[in-house]
Image 1 (cartoon, protein in one colour):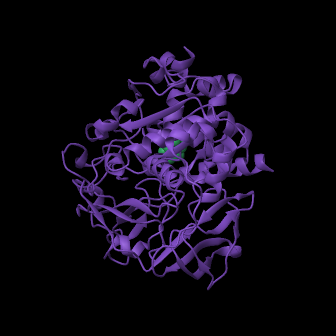
Image 2 (image 1 turned 135 degrees about the horizontal axis):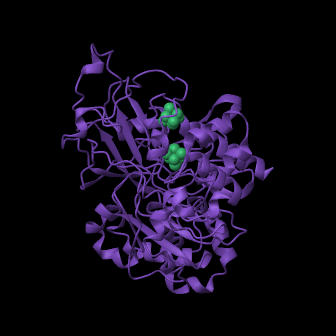
Image 3 (image 1 turned 30 degrees about the vertical axis):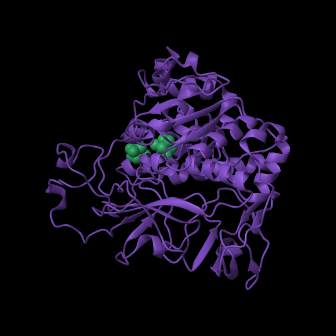
Length: 491
Ligand code: SF4
Ligand code: SF4
């Protein structure tokens, strides 16, 4: 009955009352109780897959799906290590302009734990250090010169992994610039190496609809993937590997390692959404997660003792079907994006990415660029046009009936207005939140109320902002609330 309550089968008022009295995070959503989660707790990676079902989210036929061919891009003239996409970091610079740096040499660290270092993905000279408002570090740009001269660490082989003490492994990964690929929910901060996570989620599909296909990332790295999973088992006795249904066909060589199948409804493959649908206890909220590229790179570093400089990225641009690209970590955005109209918006996710400066470099965690055309001028009689190629969630346009791909643009279709209590945001939220209620609690500075309504379960998918007819930036408001709460807790 309580699960039914949370699924919105009784009145909203009663639902909030129940949440307040008992604490939302201790309940199981009804959708997962149907999937037989009693099998979930396991100390080994399982040989069978569990299906996670999602009753909410958004399925959108978007144009721009990348091709499954892979090309290697030429070496860029510069690489950047960006601090823009690293949540919660307090960067401390370790180099100055015109310094010579080797591949794998630290450029900056996190003041909160100076052993966590962000290293240069190439050998050359520090060309520019870019600061933002209040001298906040944005990125360190390195001009590449000659062949790579690597900082060399002691390698760790798969057969000797069990002989390496856990603290030694953590220390190597921090010094090598790969520890931060492990993130901790719900705030998505760098994993706390002083704690043992209740579980680690390995996400084979990235944050975006068009993130690199995991089969292409793994095609020459299956051994490293297996090694990476063994490394994760040193940190937690429960490691789950989740993949989208439509990725499974090409993932046959690693199918035995996949423990959870998630549907192709956005954002079912997002770690916060996965955790919400499998967790049994509140303590599991502190799960760690890592994406497939991060795990492979971590394994490559341990195996060779050298910082792995390559990464795979996708670029989506309208109906242009581009191949997957292997390029150097931190490549320039202009090199990756190619030619595009100056008025375009470049984001790192269709619904939840950040806006990217075309003159900057790809962020540490980013592997997708979406080039979204500028909004066309006001359409005459736009309100009576059928909208055959417009994305719609409310089925307001004819595109909802047609089997054709739609394209995002920057049109807002109006300005911000007051909330009209339409519940669109609630009906689409993949983790059963009531974003409008949480937003109102946050706007009136009532963080306790927001927490009781499940703020920290938000997976920042961006769907509530996308669907809101009043154009309220719900995801931004909720994300700010989560970040402030995390900062307060850290002191
Ligand atoms: S509140 Fe919004 S951003 Fe958060 S999970 Fe729900 S729909 Fe996504
Ligand atoms: S979708 Fe927007 S207008 Fe509708 S309830 Fe949510 S916040 Fe309010």
